[in-house]
Image (cartoon, rainbow, N blue to C red; front, side, top):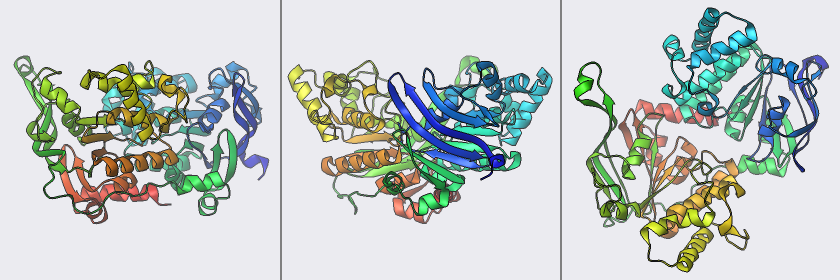
Length: 541
């Protein structure tokens, strides 16, 4: 490779926080116009390595070289490096909702970059921002430019972030997990958009991700990181077809595996949950004078019918805004509903005091495991307090010793034994990995021995190997305890591995339902076919 072909050359990159080195002598090159992926699990050092190139890794001590156009980014004075950031090297962050300013319209945020980096006037930058929104596929770009971030969908926010990153026409785009929080159809759209924009502008892209399927489809070359070391790199096809390092082989082999009890449920077994003609709505303001006297209603779930027998999993799939999460909140008794909704043969009381006797008894029968185990666990509580909290409410007669015994037994059941983790009960969530935190979340949900678990994207925030472990844990617990699961996910591979039946939702309506193999292998509705094809296109090379 001639020097003229190389856009960025990283040599012996080392990153340390205090006395602890987390990136150990990493070397890689990115060619002009190339799509290069840096992959690995959480804690592998991939994001820290990318942030270090622009010296954005907080108080880290960084050594080595990062040569861009002959200049070492690691040695540039801060003033010169600020000129590089956003102009020559731009970045798309993982979660646009936290990366965008919630108090400024997205149009103004993009225009600000254009004024600072390209010297455009206020009027010129506003018009250029709208053109960038149109180029990134945001519908009604002029109207959306006047929106605040929370008024856009997840896909639109990510497109706005891409527009901002491309505003100064960078030579290199750093994309940090750009599709993790998106459903499968949006993931495919964002991936295609990045590829199209890369071809049109000739910029290089450094993709940071743990999503190997996305890498296979998108990248020209791949570098694999493990615990701060770059263990393997090469052409994408070679890495996937003939991985040499054991860690790379393990990553590629980590796909969800189906291990559930097949066959029909017992005919006389009462369902853990049942819904007929279920409607769930939100009050909304009516326009004009009518809004002074009455409220309207937005129906987020329209006439859903389903049943979840013991020991079975109902998968719920659909794009953002389809009504999946609203359906889950109704099952958890957090939203009032119309029609029939039974949890182990009983109904939620609405309206009723939040702690009414019937509702409190039902809450012990249905529990939830959230998407992000870090944000769903209180950082101020110990593991003992987190897992034992439900027992304090629902079993107040237990002594402290009895409660602690149950907490330890439950943690051991989910694979967290005190012999393996000394001082387990006194630890805090930040002292555990992502997969271990999700096991704590499962233990918290199961400590009351519920009949139904609502699983809200339980593995989407986890690496592929950890995802496989958590799915295996959930499958084992279902077989041993006869648990019923309502599984909300946009990952078709997880649905195939876990679900017995599936319902497909769009705009609050159930468009198709039935056996998971029947629905996903021979979908009848065009929308289901589109979802399945989108998943297949992301998974294929």
